[in-house]
Amino acid sequence: MLIITSAIFAVDAMSAGKKVAVYVEGDMSRADKSIVNSSVLARLSGNKDYVAFERNKSFIDALDKEQDYQVSGEVPEREIRAVGERMGVDFVIVVNAVISSDDFCHMSARLIDLVSGEVVKSVSLKREYTGSDVLSNMANNVAYRLINKKSK
View 1: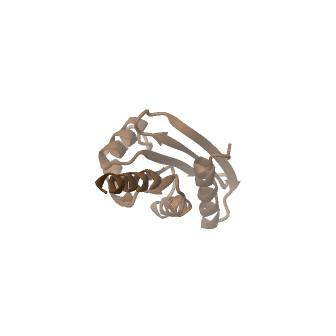
View 2: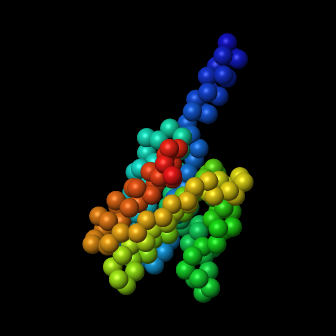
View 3: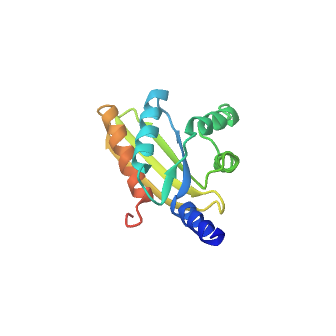
């Protein structure tokens, strides 16, 4: 009976999916970053391969504390990996979004395996920026393309 119970729990744990944290960086407001972050997390919900990391705010706060804004506006990948490992996630989705002076939104994202450091997948989009709904739609599309096995 003990072996059967252990086997059931092992199967449940394996089918739960890998934990993923999301980090958004780029030259945009905190509110716009929140829109992008929420859209990526919403796309992750219900996915059986990946599970959104439930303490995402803690992840972002930890990265913000370690970020060196004097040198650059971007967090080095090694810091993202280190914080992700400390927080207990398996993967990190890093989204870089910029609204350029010519009113285009450039959004790129990568799915990073924290154990190996491998960039599992990377995607990039560019669209005319007409409002926050563009950010939400782009983030949703980027997340879909990162986690969907059939997407390129």
